[in-house]
Length: 117
Image 1 (spheres, rainbow, N blue to C red):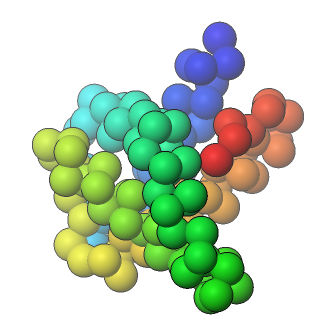
Image 2: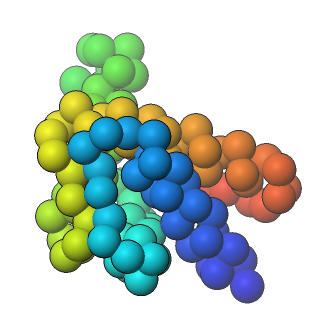
């Protein structure tokens, strides 16, 4: 049940990014749901590894590189999901910010435990 709720919250956050950020597009609702699933997998598997590998640069930049890493991971999700496109890294960066903010707000409203990472 919690997995389904987190998946739907991620899908809603991705939808917000598609609507708010010019340069992010999705062809259908099914593609959006698939992108949310891929995003969850990327955040669970690849993100922790990259966080450890990029820790020195994240510390030197006072955490700002973490935002760049989130944008790169969203860009990776677009590359892995057919029908979900991101035009530029700038759009991916802003989209990652929107996804993070919207997902956090939805988790607070629904009062569910946010996944770590």
